[in-house]
Length: 67
Image (tube, rainbow, N blue to C red; front, side, top):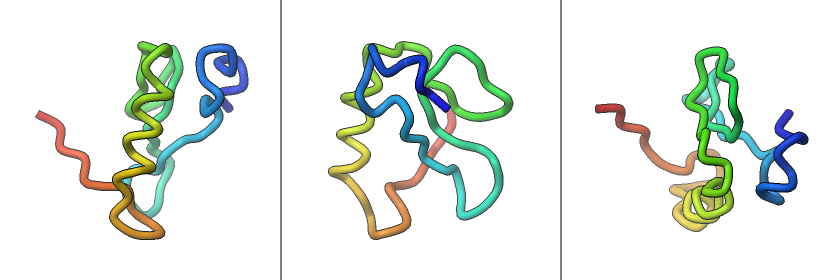
C-alpha cells in the first residue's frame, strides 16, 4: 500500500502501526479506513524522517496524543 504516492515520497509505502497490534496505522494517502492518514503528501518524507530519528526503541517511535 502507498505505492501510488511514491512520486511524493520515497517512503510512501512505510506505514507506522498505532499500538502494538491491530490494523490502525499512521500513513500517507487520501483514503482512511480508521487510520491516521497524512493527506498532505508532500510532507510525508519530513514526517517519516522525524519519526525514524526520534524512535523510542526497536518497536516504538513515540506516543500519539490526539486533541
